[in-house]
Length: 198
Image (cartoon, rainbow, N blue to C red; front, side, top):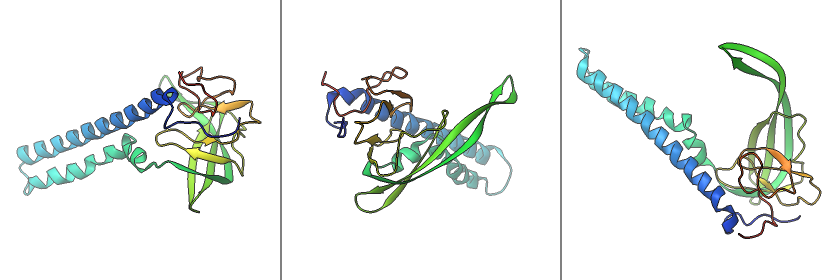
């Protein structure tokens, strides 16, 4: 299985493209709601307090409200750009995963692998991708792999999957059999070059 999927042109991937569009819209709505809340606080402050120059609270809260762009993930989605290139370096680190149960922090000795993957794009620039996996070790990506990243998806698609027995779902990052057409967890189409048109 060699070659990239027809992600942008195939009807098989319309649900995935709609998922990305909905994620962007949701992030924009959350950002707008956060901004509106902080502006409302600024307006209330300026109208109902006796402090001098209370009107300054409006622009101040407006600026603070811009944090919603980062909080919602909209900033990352807007800055995200599709790209194609070759993996030139992979750095791996492991940390303990701590969960909160009944209000208490409990360490279940679960290891999380953090991958820092450096991709050299076709124009020579290098782009860093970072992600975490609950399973360790994780060796799906290797130095020298040709990859393609799509806006709004988690990681990137490998061009040559001919030697792979498993594939990463770009929507939920599940690691599933390459014989699957749809991710058994999130149900979206897996990015593969041989998915038939529906």
